[in-house]
Length: 358
Image 1 (cartoon, rainbow, N blue to C red):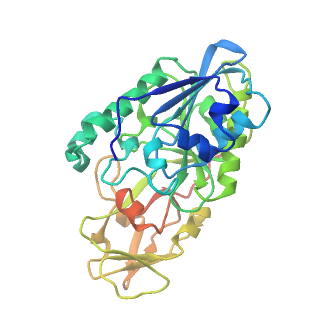
Image 2 (cartoon, rainbow, N blue to C red):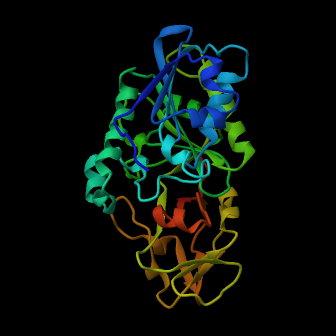
Image 3 (cartoon, rainbow, N blue to C red):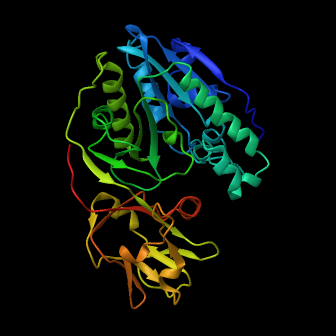
């Protein structure tokens, strides 16, 4: 599928005919990167909603369309709202919302650090210049309105509760997170995501939960309503207490190692995770909890680097016989049993199980 990476379409206060009757028709009417501007009560302030950076994460688009079409007329937010819908081509390829990015394509939310993506294996992709161009168009669309706050809506690959991610903690970051969920992860992981750019305002990524879960769409919709209706003030009101989890680490399977999922030990080579691994997204994992099985290479199959580039996997996991178990109490999130997703990202993210509420 050919993409016009230079294309960006602007809609200002779109009418009901442009928005269509449902989100599927609306999505299919789009031809590429799309920006929607909704005028607010104050013309001096802008807020940005980003969605569909990944084509298989629909909650943001579903919620945005519902927010725009619930009443007979467009909603009037307190401030101007700029909505950016990014990976339209991936979302509409074959079955709707079935592709994170196009076959033989590149993860758009890894392209906001040009130097890093060019030096990675994706730097050899024939369309890498185009994906970087689209990332720059998105960045420009944000910067040209000088927003006071930004939310970036996603779904997790596996089932799990909603949570927020940010690179810093501030009262406004906590408030933005509280509109969607009650957990915020403070991350210093650098992967070339949009969230890592400095827009001189709070930027919060919202992982709304599983892509097929109606609760995820509802969380996105309710959060957007609160985000849009906050009064114009320097400090945003916080909706509820938010638990903060610090500095996640990515558990990665090394290249060329086999990955399987099973309900019990099948003596497979490489790494075998429990088939129900997604259930551990919903709570803590105690010391000694069984997560899977390893071949004779043990923890050498896996890698978990800290911010100094040191493999610290033995601080968090151990091998009992050939069983992969937790060496300490941890929380895991974004665990999935979808092999292609796990291969392209990581097995899951890990944080120490420490409670901090603000």
